[in-house]
Length: 236
Image 1 (cartoon, rainbow, N blue to C red):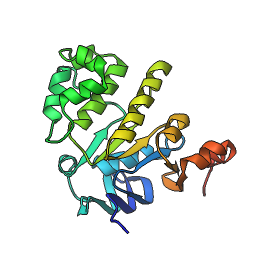
Image 2: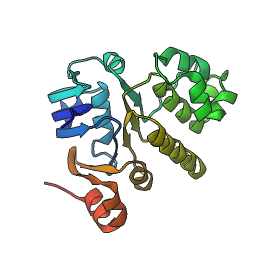
Image 3: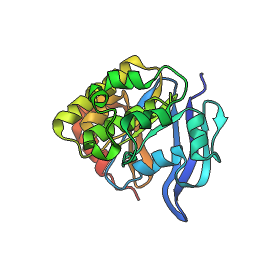
Image 4: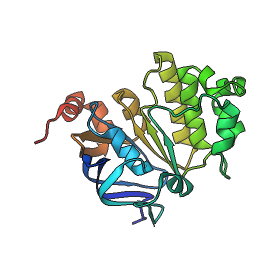
């Protein structure tokens, strides 16, 4: 059996002494995509932040591409092939679109021009400052900035949050294109279950800091009752 690209074993983490996620076992294969869903406050964002190196790890190990990155700083994880699109987007107000992409660029197939091909609106705004962009444009830039780092694993945290319905549809088209054309593995945390279940063939459900379901998205799309039970499940 092939070694997983990303592997978490018995990971417990949080902020300072506070533990938010517990006993997480998760594996992601090369080129695989998964969606992570669950109610607000169940630990989805903390899970991604832990993989990216932005939380306090209390227990467990994290491996990326055969390398133990458990103790690695966030920037070293990026060097190892981890791309992260944070929920808050992290756009610098005083940098232009072009400068954001230049700063984040690493050698590989993804270039600024390729990002502009994916997001033509950013091409038209390439000389605008981060603070001059709309919420949708900032989200495009956050994704594009992660892509030019040429990651082997791309983490995306709530990319549709705060976007108008028409922009959510555009985002879905972009995500579908990335899934179809790219070999990178992707992890999507998404509050919109419709978007999440359409994005990946595999879906993970979280509740109270733990993984409570891991299986085909098609099963949850076909059984809304099961989906509602899982999302609302209160484990003791």
